[in-house]
Structure formats: C-alpha cells, structure tokens
Length: 179
Image (tube, rainbow, N blue to C red; front, side):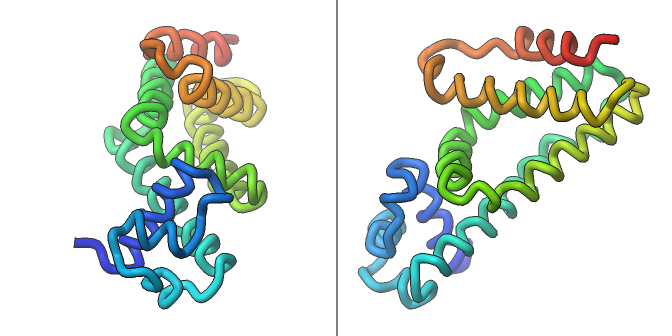
C-alpha cells in the first residue's frame, strides 16, 4: 500500500495526464485521490512544492520503468537493442500512456525539469551502442532518442487509433543504426 504522499503524487500525475498543467490544483488532486479537500495542501503547501514533488515522482517511476525494461541485461546485437527500444516505445504509448502524457505536459511547462532524465536515457543508449561497436555512438543515440520521442508523440496523438507495429519501429531503429 503506497504512503499518502505517493498516493497524492500518483493522483497528481493522473490529473496532469488528463487536464494538463493548468488542471493541476490541490483540489483536483484531492478529488483524483478520493481524499478530503485540503489533504494535498497539508502535504504540499503551494503549487511549486506540489510540482517539484510530482517531477521527483515522475523521475522515480521512469527509473523503475527503465529498470524493468532492461532486466534481461544489455543487448548483444543491434537487432536485440532495436527490439527492446520498440517494446519500450509501445509500453510508453500503451500501458504507460497516462504517465507519458503527464511527462509531456510537464516538459512543456518546465522544459528543464525533464532534461536530466532525457540525458540519462541518451547516455545509457550511447553506452549500449558503444558496447555494440556502433560508430558515432553519441550522435546515433541522440538520433534514436529523437526518433523514439517522435513516434511516441504520434502514437499518442495523430495515430492514437492505429495499431502500432513493433517490427516497423524496430526496423526504423535498425536503419538509423546501419553503417
């Protein structure tokens, strides 16, 4: 059972996902958490404190998600890496879509707030590419991350009713990494 702070922050992420940053109020979080009015303000005295705590919770959830995706260990081939990244994109657009929408809303409101997480992701990808002997690993890691972000955005917006194709996403990643 999550503690009260975690419960409030998860409710806040739900609010941001559904209503954007303008919808993030103490009252909206109380309602989303099904708690008495005033509960959120008892834990987070002002909106700035609430937003900061929400960003910390988002980073915690992102870390757990990346850890879950990487449990099989580092990829041994470009094909394996492409498959892992395609699966991650589909998970972020499917099962974790609400968290992704919240991340996008937060990043538009506070662009610097998600920078560290982005650079951790790109750095990990660069390490994986270097270990696989991919030339220009740093630039290619950025390219693949940018592609993944674009696909993710499209899956949540213009292609939200389509059936995502993991094989097509993996093939595009392989093309980006081809010599």
